Amino acid sequence: MPQTVCSGTMFTTPSGFSPHLACAEPGEEEEAPQEGPGPGACLADGHPITSASLDTLIQNLVPTADYYPEKAYVFTFLLSARLFIPPPELLARVCELCIKQQQLDQSPLDTAKVRKFGPKILQLLTEWTETFPSDFREEKMVGHLKDIIHRIAPCDEAYWKTLNQVLQKLSQRLALMSQGEESIVKVSLNASSISDKLVAFKTKPPPIQKDMLSICNDPYTLAQQLTHVELEHLSHIGPEEFVQAFVQKDSLDGTQQPCFSDQKKKTSNLEAYVRWFNRLCYLVATEICMPAKKKQRAQVIEFFIDVARECFNIGNFNSLMAIISGMNMSPVSRLKKTWGKAKTAKFFILEHQMDPTGNFYNYRTALRGAAHRSQTANSNRERIVIPFFSLLIKDIYFLNEGCANRLPNGHVNFEKFMELARQVGEFMTWKQVECPFEEDRAILHYLHTAPIFSEDGLYLASYESESPENQVEKDRWKALRSNVLGKT
Image (tube, rainbow, N blue to C red; front, side, top):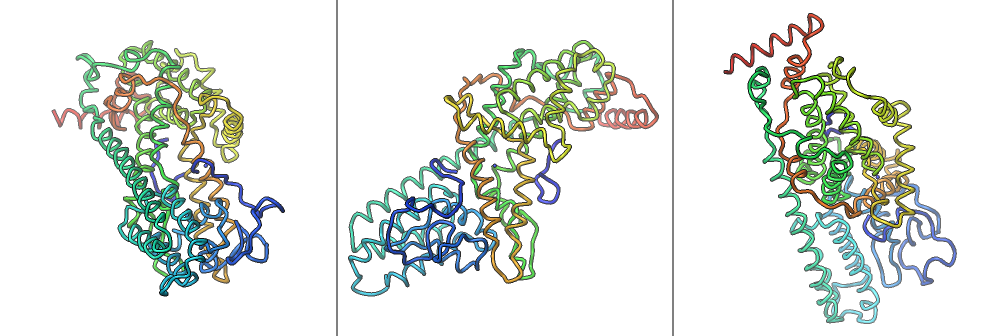
């Protein structure tokens, strides 16, 4: 059914990132003396990190002249640390440690030492800006970045050039993010709703001048265009949104706050994607309930069954579930005469695939198959994996819960950090796929702007199509019609 973004009721990296987190095998890491606490997800003694204090984990992130953390560790910690410490404060701590360890507040600087350290801190800051650019929308973040580079720049003028390149690329990324967010907001504002009162008068011209079948009558083409919309939404979602959606105050300070407190603005793309899912549910239900004739309604049902099947074949599970949810909404499912006219064998097969039994066992099996196909694919067409987003968010919510709860000794559960990073990292790989299908602007425009009924409007249209069968339905129909006539 249509979803809402709420941690209690809802609800899988950058190019080259491997969500594989483990100690390096002998010979895999470049041999070098270690000043820091050790590579990757291991401490100085070589043991894997299962838990540690926040201070230890921050220290493990800080590069030195002879040490740089494993890339997977950088992603994992930068993703999950925000559950305990805001990014500006984390970067400030990193910079303070760098200044202290490298004696960057001394004059003169140890040029030889700084030249060994400089490229490593630049690499860390570059990875941070590339993977979590939205963190740097805050001026404090950019200020810390500039400060640390200004301290090492006297030792090598090339650092100034690198800083300018990092800032230029960051500015471009932030500009693209803003454009994408603005376009999504614009689409949401353009989407209109049908006036529910018009439904009660089916003898008059229908309130919808166009319907889906007049815009697109080929199920495969519509499934392709739905995939365009899905991938467009996915492209704007940053990995940090999966954590920031559920950020609370540290449970140790006794001032827990609900998700979305001051983080609401930082999860706008995730919320927009949930709104798209809801819109598609209601659009499908509206298209089915609107036709006056039973034969036409049955035709629309069969069409969307075929669209759902094509979405499944493509690997677009989110649109598939939205379509199934729309067809299972009560105003649609109660149309027994209409369903009796439609060929529904394929629909029941699809419902079986998305059956929630066993924590969506059938769907998760299909998702693993699509993920495996994506890993071995030779074309973008075979790389498409669009997960059922609400279930993904639910999975990530419970991972966040595990990450945010400290252990009895006050340590952070790093194993949970790694589980979260694997899940989000997989999603980040999927979202980078470029849609291989040609855009059809007319269909995309319709998907985004076609009027849809509210829940009351759907019920009213449903009762007008097939009369109420019991007293409860009769009373509701009477109340809806009375409400409509009262507004005319």
